[in-house]
Length: 260
Length: 180
Picture 1: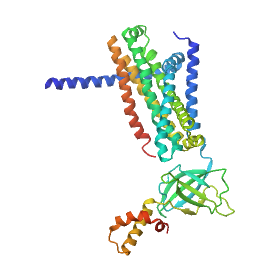
Picture 2 (picture 1 turned 90 degrees about the horizontal axis):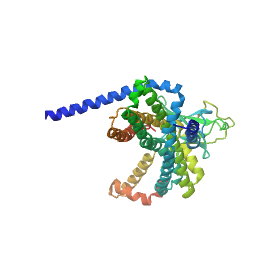
Picture 3 (picture 1 turned 90 degrees about the vertical axis):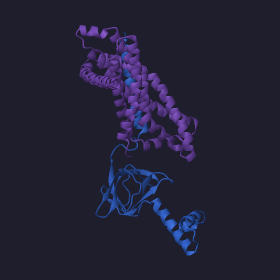
Picture 4 (picture 1 turned 45 degrees about the vertical axis):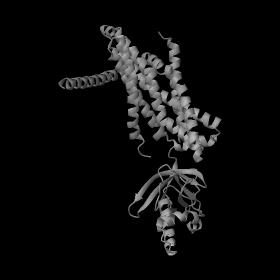
């Protein structure tokens, strides 16, 4: 009985300790961000590996998600004789929800896991310790550029996802199923608002980018420096950031779209 | 480790693509192209009941969209709803005695304000008020009135079937009754 209590207490303490470490880590990484803006090369290299290399998976999944939305939406709407609203259905679901959320999930799997593994291996092979020996702060040299690159890349990726998805929906709806092209775009334009829908979607993806990259770099930095530790940290990154994205999505949706 | 030039070009392309996607969303998907901000003029109309009218609902004339609803307020002196309509500035030849009605697009569609031109030589200007208005039809009221009239008819013809039964049978036969 006492043992159970003690284990519970220890678990709780270590959880909060880790949470505190994560926030301190975030604060130090953010302090390094202005410096990164001065050293543009570092940032460019990270945007390449985090953003550009995620482009293919984002493009392909965006296209297919849009096409599936077109098909499914058409099948439902045609019962009500409202297949002209297909553009609205596709665009609103993409811009408000699927664009930010699905690209954040893909980003966590594609870029987040890579970030964790990279930083974790740097720690396991004592490169981070070596940097500290040379009076180079690894938080500023390694973590801050990766963090900034993630926060910058995800909104762009989400926008690309939504745009490609809208084209995919257009391809299926107008090209294959014969929805009127003019109605498709004009209904979409009359129902989708620049501020309420598109900018809120961008805000969502900025928040997701922040959280996913934070989790990824922290898990890497905080890893147990063994090969098993790195593999666990990578798994945790994907699981935790997916959960965080889905949970935060609900909160953000409730905050943003609770009134028409 | 990296070919710096390729990397930079790739990143530049990526950022350009992302911004282009945002631009496409703004121009092609959203309503930015339809309404480029508040370059119209405001006209006020007072309604007894605006029903389900919302801010940003369309304002049409002859079925063509000429503006949108900018604001809906309540005047607690006259107990009327005050609807501010934002009309695009190129439609500046709307007569002052035009009628504003709130209609529903389709059976379950959104509500919109329809303007019907009057015969006056003077045209609506910014801040003018549309005097002739027609409120939204509230479906419950119509159904209620219909059921009430049916029920009273049923009571008159001495059929003690109750209001529910009278209402139920009324749907089949009552098309002429509803019209009057």
